[in-house]
Amino acid sequence: MKTETIAAIATAMSSSGIGIIRISGEEAFSIADQIFRKKNGKKLENIQTHTLHYGFIYDGEEKIDEVLALFMKGPHSYTAEDTVEIDCHGGVLMMKKILETVIKYGARPAEPGEFTKRAFLNGRLDLSQAEAVIDIIHAKNQYALKSSVSQLSGAVSNKIKKLRENILYEIAFIESALDDPEHISLDGYGDKLKAALQPMISETEKLISSADDGKVMTEGVKTVILGKPNAGKSSLMNLLLGEERAIVTDIEGTTRDILEEHIRLQGINLNIVDTAGIRDTDDIVEQIGVNRAKNIAEEADLIIYVVDSSKPLDKNDKEIIQMIKNKKSVVILNKTDLEQVVLKGSLEEETGEKVIPISAKEGIGIDLLEQEIKSMFYHGDINFNDQVYITNVRHKTALKSALNSMEMVMESIENQMPEDFYSIDLMNAYEELGTIIGEAVEDDLVNEIFSKFCMGK
Image (cartoon, rainbow, N blue to C red; front, side, top):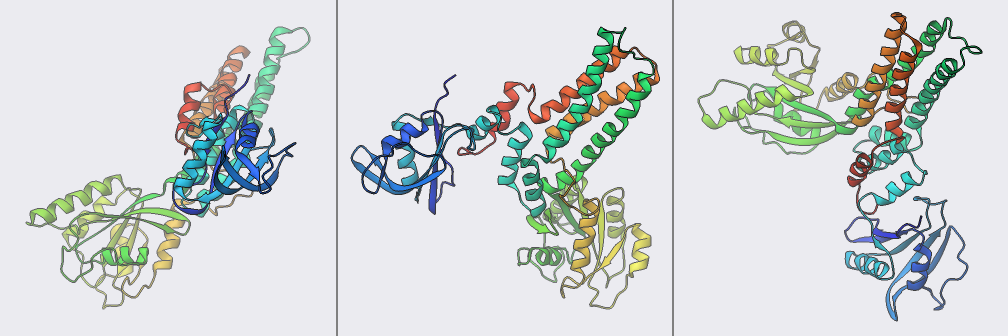
């Protein structure tokens, strides 16, 4: 079936050194041949694949720009179709002008993500690899980037395909035995299936548990800094940011509203919020800030509780200690450069949490804080040699459904149910895993996934 030839600007819509216009489809070469001329004025003949040509883009006799044109014949291209990429000068007006010319001579504007969607539909990428493309573009730290590159190279796909292969083998055996009981016996098969399923269940559980690390990689950690007024919350915020963003004074209650920033710490993105100091106050504006701080703390993934070591704990501290109960928390004993009234051991006993002494003013102890946060949110050392991290909520949901089906098979074996019960649940697991790599997924889901891509990808 003949497909339309599509085109789009593949680089950012801003002034830059180079801009790229991508053309993909059966007419890509013929369209390029109409608008591209070599320096000597000749048109291209017998274009060789994966060759780069220097020349000019013309609209009729109007010379538009000096360019390099890269020609790639399918299936050895990103979309597995004939593809041309025009490298032009990176002015926004110039890129738009060349795109308009390409469309004038036969292409149509690509939809968001349509190039990657064609790569998926043409079998060059499976769905999990296609989703990794957008993850690479949006990666905010080195771990997220490495995980996405690993997924693009097939790390997730290979794990899922192996699981499906093992499940399908068992389904085929059961169906064959049910169809031909005279030659294939199911005697004692329940125990054999149980032994075969256990490593599959373990592998699936391992993938699901990796999603916690994956979520941290991609979304970051919602972090709230709590403490009494003038405990050093804003000073800590500025130290972590490496710049003076929060106002710091000796006057209590300086911070009256929330201040949110994004920082990268030991490979983790912290979406960090500095809040108003927690205390009873008659100041209406300050009280609004205190209430907001309490509400945000309820939803936080991590609370950093800052204690002024030079002042004794009071009822406001008691309230904060209750707030951090059953929450992931780091307790900071600040102002250790001053004479200490609150000691590390007593604060650990009071809070039940590990206490890290620091001096935000002197920049002492911050490295220990960074290491502690990393150890709290990453389970062991992060590596991408043989470990796969699930970073996509859709993948995690499918894995949980597959795991549930496999556990139902184990339950059926325990209850000595007929073998066709095993087959039904095994097929459910097989199909759920298949949705991760794009086997038998609905068109609406595919369209929704690729609609989130940028126009030229």
